Amino acid sequence: MKYSKLLSAIFITALLPFAAIAAEDEKIWNNVLKPEYFARQAIEESDNVIELEAPVRAEDPALVPFKIVSKIKQTKEHYIKKILVLVDNNPFPFVGDFEFTPESGKADIAMRIRVNSNSNIRAIAQTNDGKLTMTKKFVKASGGCSAPIGANLDEAMKRLGKMKFRLDGDVKVGEPTSVQLMISHPNITGMQMDQVTRFVKKAHFVKDVKVSFNGKPVLTAKTDIAISTDPNFRFYFVPEKAGDLKAEVTDTFCETPTKRDVCTKGETYTETFKIQP
Image 1: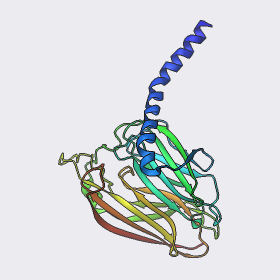
Image 2: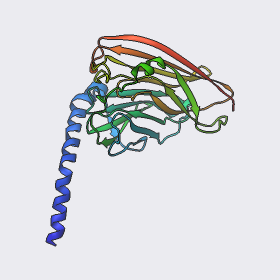
Image 3: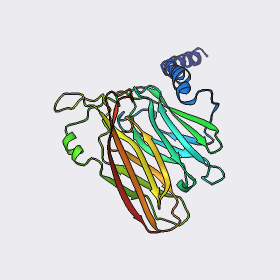
Image 4: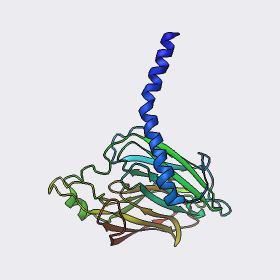
C-alpha cells in the first residue's frame, strides 16, 4: 500500500513541470492571444470539428510535422471557412490563417512548422455559420525559430520561388483529391545566424499562398516565420473536370522577427499544373 502511494506521488511530481508549462500557456492564451485574435467571441474547445496530429516531443524543432484533420464535410450548406494556427510560446505566435471553400473537398492541411520552446499548438476553426471551435496539442521542443540557416543559403536563394505540385493518388471527378504543394524558400525567421558570415539575416518568408482550380479558390493562406524552410503544404481540392491547378505565392521582408509594422513586399511566384481526371 505504501509502495503504491509512493509511485503515485512520484508520478504526480513528474507531471508538475508539464502542468506548470501548460498552465502558463493558458495565461498567454487567455490574456494575450485570445483578446488579440478573438476579442469577446465565444470559442468551444472540442475535437468534433477539427483534430490535430503532432508529436509529443519534436525530433527537430525546426521541422515539426503538423496536421489538421477535419471532422465535417465541406458542403455549400455547412463547411469550415477558416482555420487559424498559433504556437503560444513562439516569439511570433501566429503560424498561419488558412481559408477553405466547398471546392476544397476537405478542410485538412498538413505542413512542417517551427516550435521554439515547449508550447501548446492551437488550431481554431470557423465554420461558415460563424461558430468557433478550438483544439490544441502540447509539443516539447527547443530552438526551432533560431535553428541555423545552414551553409547552403546561396544555393537556396538560387532556387527561390520554384514550386512543384504532387498528387497523392488518382484524380477522380467530384471527389476530394489530395495534393502537395512544395515551395523552395528558406523562410528566414530573423533569428537565425548565417553559418558562413555569422550575421543574423533579416526575416524573409512566404506571406501569402493562393491555390485555385480553374479560377475557383481552393486554399488561401497567410503564413509567417513559424512555417519551416521550404514550405510544404498538403491539402485537398475537388476536380469537376480537367483543368489548371494554380499556385500564387508572395513573400515579404520584415525588419524584426516579432513585428509586422515595417515590412517590404517581396516577389510573387506562380506555378500551374494540368489536371486530367
